[in-house]
Structures are given as C-alpha cells and as structure tokens.
Amino acid sequence: MNNIPALEWVVEIYELYLTARSFRSAAVQVGATIGPGVDVGWISSATVLLLYGQTLLGRMTLENRMINSSITNDALVLQMEEFEIQDMTAFKSFVRDIMPKPWNGCRLDKTALTGKLEVVDKGHSLTIAIDLCGIGGLETTELSVALSGHILKINFSMTNAATVEIYFDEAEFRLQKNGVDLAILAGDFNIETGETTYELEGEIDSFSRKELFGNATLAGYHLKANDLKKTWLIHALREFKIDVNLDQTVVY
Image (cartoon, rainbow, N blue to C red):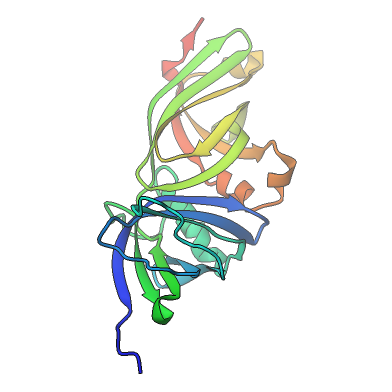
C-alpha cells in the first residue's frame, strides 16, 4: 500500500497561448515557472484544466511521452492537444474580461496568473489547474490619430496585465461615430504579454473626413485569414472596443 501523499504546489504561469481550431474548440500552450523547489519527477503524462471560477472551460491530456524536457528544470512547457470548449458562456466572459474596459465577469483580484500543480498517480502523472477568472486584462495608452489626404492612421499601445496570448494576425476595425462607420482600418493585431504597439491604417472618404471631431469608437470587425474566419476568434475580435478622441486628430 502506498501512503505517500500527492505532491502539490502553486506555480506561476508565465505563458498561456491560446489558438483557435474551430467555433467550438481551441488548443493551448502553457508555460509554468517551477524552480528547484518543485519536483515534477519522471512523469509521462500531463493534464491541464482551464477553469473560469468553478466552471470548466477545457480539459487536455498528454499521454506516454517525456513531459519535462527542460534541462535546467526551472520551467515547464506543455504543448497541449485540441480541446472542446465545455462552456461557451464562461469562455466568452473570460475573453471579455481581458479586453480593454472589462464588460462583466470576475473581479480583477489576481496579481499574477497561477496554477495548482500536482504530481499524482504514484509519480507517473502531473495535473495543473488554471483559473482564468480575475486575471486582469488590456489597457490602452498613447492613442493617436493622423490624417494624410485620404489615408487615416490610428496608433496605440496596449499593456497586457495577464499572461494570456491570443493571435488574430491581420484584422480589420471599424471607426464608428454615432453608429455610423467613418472608416475601416486594418493592421496586425495580436494580444501579447507586456506592452505592444499597434498601427492601423485605412482610407476615409471626403464626407467622413468632415466628421473627424468629437468622440468615436474603434471596434474589432473582421479577420483577413480565411482559416481564422471560421473560428471563435472572429467573436473574440468583436469584443474589442476602445474610445477615440477625434478632436486630437493630426492633419498632415
């Protein structure tokens, strides 16, 4: 009889990279800082649980392979297989939480994203549970608007308080005022860890140029890559919305 208890630690998640596979599925890569005090042993299987509070978003398992391949033993990287999103309502709330000016969901009370790591099954398996509720989100700064002829440019920076990364590649955005589109702007748009600068550009007609004053909104609209259009990324992009002060437009 084995009376050795399961080993358990709370570890910092320095990377959680989500990719979309369909409207109902995703894949994830998880990077955890383990350090010398965390002994993951000679495990050959790993399970990752993504949670939003008490709600399960997804469960992924790797079987019969070398899990901890780091020679320095200070980081654990898990490239997990595709999983089906178990609760789309909770997943939507998670995405909304990380967008600028969170719409709803959990109170932002975490200073860092962590996971509960356990070595179980007599040292053969590892389980890590990550709660994505209350992890903080994106803040925009240094927004600028520039007009040169028929070309409108909007630049801004975003700081990602969470360690969640989602890549949209090239995306289109609507600049709207009072519910009317002034311009469609495009550029690379990926949610990355730390601070990232974004440059969007599009054409604006002579009528809309006369409306470049007052307040407007910049909202996610469309994805350029055909393979991404048929995934939940299109919904996630449309949750992105920031305020734009058109009175500060610089004309060249």
